[in-house]
Length: 213
Ligand code: ADP
Image (cartoon, rainbow, N blue to C red; front, side, top):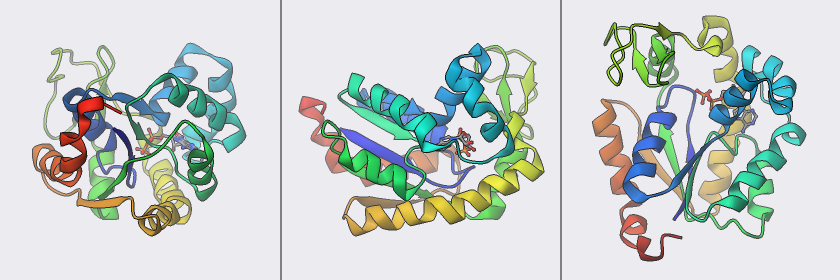
């Protein structure tokens, strides 16, 4: 099964992708995680991407495209989270001979809700688990109290990310709708509610996962 997860910042893509990856045995490929990891390791990709990520702009396709293509070549079954984000990137994926997307899950949330989630988002500095500042003071996964905001969740950067999403990524939703691949899911409500809706949306694909393609 090859899935793409698409939605605005704050839609909960990372959380959903992790759960789906575990349930269906898929590799979770997150472009944002790849970039943050490269930045924190001081890798060449990170050096090129840092200023874009930290200001909420898109990393140029010539910096990111080949890295994603390489990752996709290594896995058979995956959930791709955060890529494609522009029409150029969507066409790039479509043209890769070894990638045949089964479905695109579009997680829809309004700006107000998304911004509220991201303002309060905290990442555990020890294990990387994500929580909301209103929900917990310690990490629900490892118990650490070292919870930090992501550098690009500051209000001005957040606003920029949302603008970029509306301008660049919404057309990608229409691109996949036009190709008959889109499954739209309501992204409001609890994590469990959203996850149940997503699973219902991919149900027939999940059941067909005998060859785990
Ligand atoms: P979110 O979906 O919450 O905005 P991500 O973790 O997916 O966060 O992405 C964080 C940042 O990484 C983006 O704002 C952008 O700078 C960069 N990035 C991630 N994916 C892409 C992509 N496909 N193309 C260009 N830049 C990207």
